[in-house]
Amino acid sequence: MQICKTISETRAAIAQARQAGQTIGFVPTMGALHQGHFSLVSQSCAQCDFTVVSIFVNPTQFGPNEDLNAYPRTFDADCQGCQKLGADLIFAPSAAEMYPKPNLTWINVEKLTEHLCGTSRPTHFRGVCTVVAKLLNIVQPDRAYFGQKDAQQLAVIQRMVADLNFPTTIVPCATVREEDGLAMSSRNAYLSHEQRRLAPVLYQTLQNAAELIKQGNTNATDIIAAMTEKITTQTPGQIDYISIVDKELLHPVATIEAPVLIALAVRIGKARLIDNIVVDPS
Ligand code: PAF
Image (cartoon, rainbow, N blue to C red; front, side, top):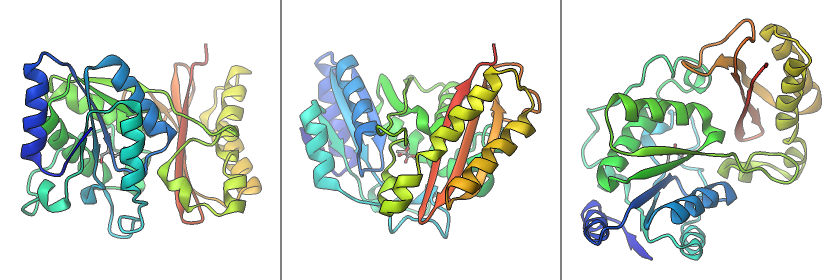
């Protein structure tokens, strides 16, 4: 497995693989890899001849008071994990390599970024879209793999790739959970022992909401109230949002009549945890 720090060596290695007739799979990450990321790498290795994993903590997707500096960095372990699974190339650029000049060109996906994480992180998705567009231009993969835990990110990237005609298939991958249901996240590392013990309540809350909908409750306000009650009474978490949105534009719905995304973001200690499920009322 090759480790490349520059765009030019990365492009040269990928060009060789292409010339040899290989298909290219791509897993973009910010490092601190866990089983969720590794499941994306495994899928890429199973479906593509040459797998590229990028490790880059992208400064443009963090807001001024967010955890850019504290974000966990475990580069050696990340590389070992990827190598074991059969990845072919790690692209690990510096910030100066990715942004040699102050960035003046941004990609904004409208509508889909108005709610959920877009409300409390107003510049987050333009940073994500811009870096993902740059990475797709550098790697030019046949397929790129994204986790459904970041459901809004996945929807936004799918729309960007469709709107801008990137020749890459976006492959959505299922959320990987700990045994107690907590969605795997690099930010789980911020949780204390006690916070970690209580964090699975978030997924239980999503499951309870699904159950209420299956029992025939279609009123989004009632379901959000039940979810709020459970999280505030059973965890020390501060709710950033709990939303029930349509699957097309991710806008809140009042009545649940078609498949919806139920999503939440909760701060527990230093960790801002997100999770979601899709529920079909039929
Ligand atoms: O999901 C992430 O880790 C990041 O948002 C991504 C897609 C690698 C862009 O920096």
